[in-house]
Amino acid sequence: MFRYIFLVLGTVFLVSCAQLGSIVQSGNSQNEDISPFATEITEEEILNQFSDVPFPPDTILDLSKSVVVGADENWFGQIFFNSNRSSNEVFSYFKDHMPDTGWFLIMEQQGNQIFLVYEKDLRVAIVNIARKRSGSEAILAVGPRAQ
Image 1 (cartoon, rainbow, N blue to C red):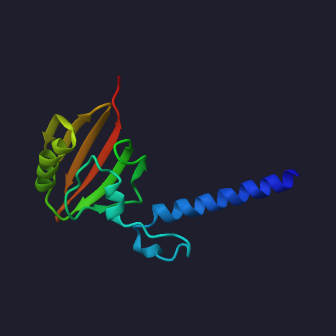
Image 2 (cartoon, helix red, strand yellow):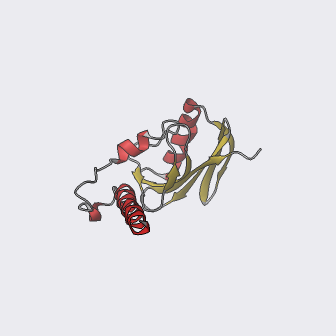
Image 3 (cartoon, rainbow, N blue to C red):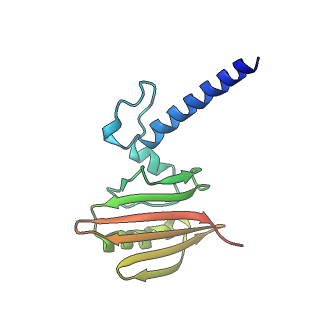
């Protein structure tokens, strides 16, 4: 009896891991044939899950580093992304468009790296933009606000 229970639980665990691997690596073109049953999720579909954060055009997600829980306006985590736009353009984009989705700017800092800190309802968003020779890379971290 216990043998069958362990067999069923082991099978469920393996199937769950396989599905998680296909979601995490869907943006990695090196692993296109992970599973014949995996459906390819596009970056646009992933970005649309975060409807309350406007991403600059031509955003390239780094799914191998990003960790997100939830969707729509109830998500938190870190999204790593690159842009062909300069760090100043990415900064301006967030500064101009975050208020359109209800985020209130708390602080901004420009130096070697650019930081924008926003608040919305019971969440805080920190945008960290780093300069690169060509374009920029950024981290968007969203989490619950301390009470």
